[in-house]
Length: 254
Image (tube, rainbow, N blue to C red; front, top):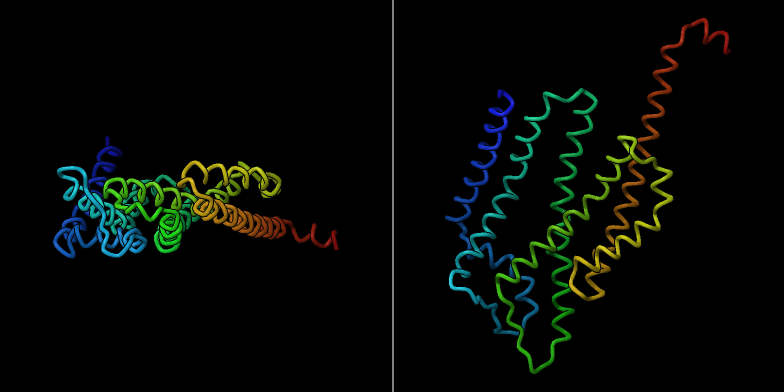
């Protein structure tokens, strides 16, 4: 029961933090301004004077509110993760704490980096690429709810993609897969990356490459980090073993 009470307390603190940030953002700068920032890559690709549309009755209100709630969660994410860390930390060993805290910090930073890469690079490139194929007889006017669903899918896809180094390091550190095996399956990972990109991204070659190529590069980064960690661990174990040997054994070896 004490663990359940502690879990409830941590969850309430995390939800309260998200709601507090949401209220602040709702007051200033407001949901409409936040949605305008999110919609800027799409608006920049539309013909001059063209705006997005809302087909639902309450869509003009609900969509900006959802975007504001998402922004509040991202801003409060460090505090939310701290509450999760504070709940599980007492049950971890010292070496597990040393591994868990950097993984939590790096995974959060990489997820944010994936979303930023998607917003500043992928959206602007893909939207202009798609707009270039639109016939002159068509005036693009995307629906704001459909745009939000698309943005959420792309943010999640690129955020998870940028977590690949953390996943690779975690698999290698726990002994599930060694570095040699990770290098051997490199070809399968490349094929899988392009398959995932074809399923997740829009049906154009450009967006597929912009997801698959970073995934492959980040996989290589994970292999390099895993090899470095394994090398340091081996050196540490060898140093510990040499310290545990008696002076007579050292003299006999010499």
